Image (cartoon, rainbow, N blue to C red; front, side):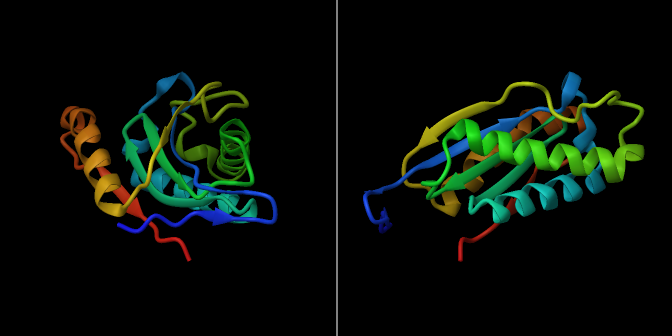
Length: 153
């Protein structure tokens, strides 16, 4: 695999990381496929707006995994804030009825997040990681994990 470094006027490098967000109260709202799709679309819209490249998104019943590649414009904390803030606002303003029985108040996401920096990432690595890590969560629900793969343009 060829590693491509990102170059700007004053830097050269690579920054890839994995984020995991959890809904408020760790509710299993992502068992609903419509909520998955809407959340995915809002995360991608926020990423596009802020020039964050998402290579893959995977859902468990009560969390979402996001793989970000070639990130040079934002710190991990800023990327998490931008993605969570926009997706939370849009889900609450436009689709609150879909999860009103599980989430209440002015929250969609829990306050924190998990992150891990990773080296060069390819789609095989991402697929394997998400599939293996999600199997334990979906066995309870007797559903398959959902991996939504994207390619950077």
